[in-house]
Amino acid sequence: MADLLSQKLISVQNVSQNNAYTSSVENKTTTANEERNFRDILRENKTNIIASGLITGGAILLYLGLTRPGKSDIFNKYINGRIAEMVSIVDKFSDFATEKMETAFKESLSYIANYKKTHIVNSEAFISKLKPADTPQKVISAQDTAFGRLYQTFKDGIKNYMDDFSVLFQRIKYSMRGEVSTEQHRTTLKLRDYCTLPHSEKIDEDMIGSAETRLSSKQKSLIDFMERLKNTKTNIAENFQFGQMAEAITESRLSATRTKEAMLDIAFDKIRKMMSLGKDFEPMYKQHRYDLSKVQSLDEYLKPGKIPDEVMQSFEPNMFMEILEKTDLSKLEEKDVNSIFYKMPYDYNLKDLRYLIDRIRLHSIVDAEKSGKVYNAMAIKLEHLSNILNDFGEKELLKRCNFDIEKYNPDLIEARLYRINQVSRRMGYENFSVMNREMLKVNESYADLKLPKFADVIEGNPAKYFKG
Image (cartoon, rainbow, N blue to C red; front, side, top):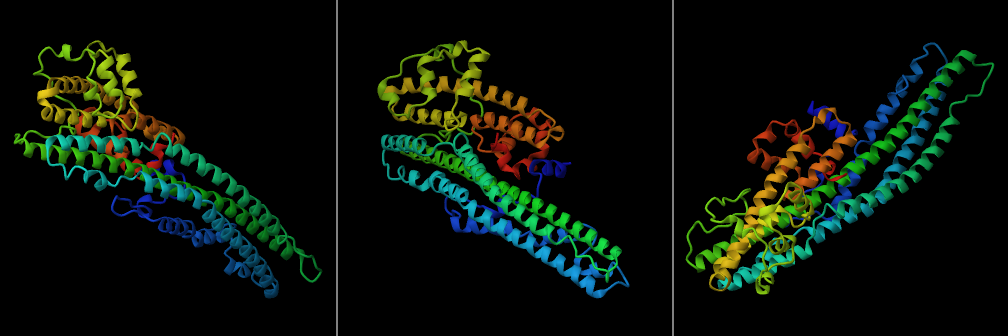
């Protein structure tokens, strides 16, 4: 059943993006390699398609002369020669279509390469800013500066870049298909010239009629082949490049996540040692929920209140800091939680809220004498907000993941996956694979749904998760 679903998702021969694209901060694929991979994929199935085109219509070229035993060998060789010329004409069309696609889609390949160059985070460039810091104050100051620069420089890819890429690719595709279709029409007209034979009293009409039937059958199979080739190669190009773009966005997100978590790990480790704190002084960003059971008079912490300017200046502007000052979390209704959740930007999501809480915890220790109480109150309120948003997000994911994927057509599957992504990304999950793995850990109800059983198929087609 998973194989059937995979065929539904891609509808044509699938190309494994993982074979063509491997990206990491340390080892980035070059544009030249990507173009070579793309060119090889477009060309690799030419022989098989041509062969299947020859067989279609009821006769293999090599044996055409034997289908009428006892008739003129010269006449059969003449017919064979015509068919060979027809195949040669279509072979030239195949080369034209492939070369046209290689040239046309270089622009979209360059877009992907440029995105990777500018959006995959060089972790060391940020982490290195923390290493020389030799006092707790310098550590958190360097960390806050690095976080601010990271958020400013590396924006999330899904909202703008996948949409931009889709518009670019479709423009290239339709322009290219117009040129290929024009050449296809010319080739079709040429093939028609080969299907009418001169009539002669020296050759009986039955033989001429039979030969014309075979030529017409071959013409039809070759015309069908050209249409199939054009569509198949276009679909292969689309699957390949959208897959590359999806993987580039995922790698950008993962590289940002690794960098943020590495900065927190280093900052906590340095401050723990500098201030001789216990081993339990660690970042808590991996927790999905915070334990606030020991907090007395929790409602008082949830009230809005003015945060001193010197405290606000330590953090980049974000919606969570605004909530601290303006929103009474003790009186939130379901509609309020819904509004807050869906206002979260993709590049400052629930996971980023947890990073922010850890940064505030660091400040509460380092700046304990000056503003410790302010930071503690901020952390408690944001931990409560994180719990609320986490619970809401999990419920939303369960609702959106609860559908029978086997009963949906490809367009509806793609639309449902995109709706799941809208929630998943706000939860801080970089792609479907991360979301699926984490939900299986933290939510027993998720494991009972049908969707996780097809995780391998969805993960093998990452672009379907991002396209809406």
